[in-house]
Length: 298
Length: 116
Image 1: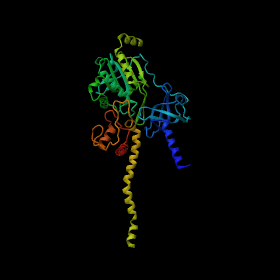
Image 2: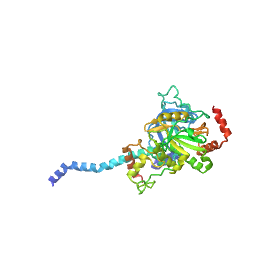
Image 3: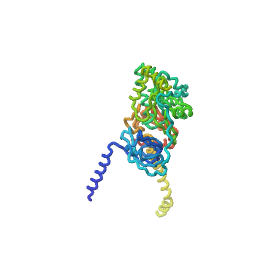
């Protein structure tokens, strides 16, 4: 075979390989399945370092082929490719192979704590906000509250930074509608009380409020003592645990009515507009509807 | 002449030691930079090399970070300032305190210095 032919084959192979996944990057991953969620098409993996993509940690991944989620079980060791868009805004798993199923758990993993049902009253546990002041969820009675959980050192742009950025956009919009300010409130709760002290939360909050401290009147950043934090997380279905030097966690957003009852949860897919619309609707709902909702609880 | 040659041969090992001492810092710097690149890919690239993230502020690209007199924040482009930013965070950038060791930060700085 002539050198020209060999070169042509190499170039053609390269072109074919790149054309198969235009604009995508692939990284090889090895790890162990910790949990799976057929409804959201996700598996949570405790994975080794993924050179070029991420340090070792436990986190949920979407899977391209839904059949894979049916097939794998917690305890399975797997190898897979993490595929990301070139701009890094999205990533998922492809080519998932079970390499060892001897550790497969015969019994299903413990379910996450049973969160409060829609309509149930939220617990009013003491939280300490960015000013070091003790606050309770009851303090916001009369306002529709959008609550979420973060930790300020979260390095994953699609997790806590995204949640806080979305809340910041909602806050900006709300301030443009003076009538809504008094009827709504945003609350970001940290599940890392050891690091996220009041001064740290204040600094974090100011970064999302364009350094305007008056914004704290509509958006609190708070944490709690670990035991209360665990109760609050259980009430809202949040899962979090320390993993090496990071905190693995689920994402949860809760809408609470002006009467202090659960209206809606978001845990997988949502948009900023969807959250904001729901908050506005709840804040401006006629009292009759709110009363019915409160009545249903009792 | 022969006597000089014998003297040179007797002390040849000094030349080897001198050469090794001259090369060693370069090797060490290269290793630090390589480790720094791995750390960068694992901890920083997911934000600083991405675009169109759903974030309030897009993280800045870091190519040529130390070529400029100032950092994207406007602070002086010094090792001390970048170390402080990595450890304590800045604005919406999370702190890496407790997650990266002093050695890790040193290696990251070595890599950032090489980013053109």
